[in-house]
Image (cartoon, rainbow, N blue to C red):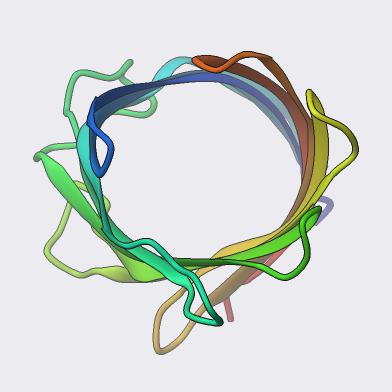
Length: 182
């Protein structure tokens, strides 16, 4: 059986710094998914993500010590029917970042994510490599995914970021992934 999946997801993340070490944030995503197999094709679309959360910077790295923080967020059950969840779903991340040079940095996230439909968490990870092209432009490549004792989902993406000013950054990115659900 041929299976084809095509999706476009436009998302927006708003981050509000309360102090130098504490922020609140929210994320919203509108998604369009198209599926096709040998017999028919169908599409789903609508609001697919709504979150509120916080990030706390615990350690500002220096002298070989990475910066370390935690991020806690909650997915809200207010989505379009094709994407909706039953319960508020938490996500916890430990974040570590390190500047390798004045232009090159690495970021690693490791945590747990709940889907909002059951009480079984999924492990999540991100490994991000960033390079500062100049004062306003940077580029990145990252590997990220989800895992359980029986599944592993692996994805890659990359893109560019433009710092409009000290308070606004615009990103454009794209990627691909492979899901092994056996």
